[in-house]
Length: 338
Ligand code: NAI
Ligand code: MG
Image (cartoon, rainbow, N blue to C red; front, side, top):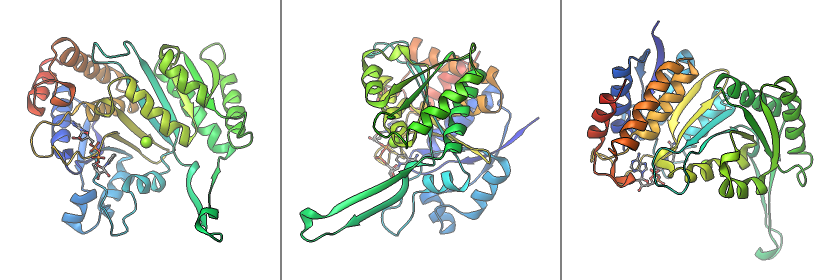
């Protein structure tokens, strides 16, 4: 029962951290049969295209991809590959978990999953600049939109995720006091969805600014957060910061046609090729991928190995203040797989 999956090593440190993740997944006995494809600068180098058709075809076929970071080519009019993938495959749910792994940080025992709506809100790029008279009088405007169907779909995803992953509470984050229509329908749909889970999953709601404050004062009150695109963009980085920054932050982009798992960080050109990159964010993204295909058993074993290696044995890469290189950390992780 092998599961075909697309593997995009990516640019910069991408191939190094991808090799590490694949080695650990192999040692774990993960069921993925990889189809390796290029994108980003590697796509331009190999096929003259940052997102070659063969790569898209593979994702369309497997519906499942693990993607290393891609360097966004500067100039040349390339559209962000990540945005293109999101739109092409209707990847409407952006999953951003944040869990404390490193001891001695500012916040212990944080375990929050943020679900961000990925296709609507203020990311529709309906922007306009109006040069009226003298430049100081010019106006810039941006239109945002949310559809009821999409608000319902993202909230259903969040509640279903909570149910499947044994989580107890979903917080709807909005600004319905000011953006009464735009985020009011999100709150309405969210409350409607919550009714179906009454008695099983608790539901509350928070205004986004109050939520940002509470996330810093008392983050432990949060379990699953679901919110619209722009608020989710900001809050997902906030919760990554609570647990040690982007080096530890995995992400997933999920839709009915495909699911793409990745690290939140970029291709880190400053350390590429040195063998010192931290593979843990992509490793945790692979953990999300295992859960996505229902292999919670393997994801739990992977999580336990990461915790033992980083927390107990203190094998850490330089970005986390340690002295291990990518290979050393990979070996330690494999040695800690129970
Ligand atoms: P970056 O995340 O690549 O690097 C920021 C800093 O964090 C650098 O000092 C880097 O060495 C360090 N860092 C990042 N990941 C690390 C890891 N796994 N281990 C150790 N250190 C790590 O962000 P930057 O420099 O702004 O972007 C570089 C390139 O990556 C750009 O072309 C950007 O467009 C692209 N990018 C791609 C993303 C994606 O494909 N999802 C996301 C963010 C940026
Ligand atoms: Mg962001």
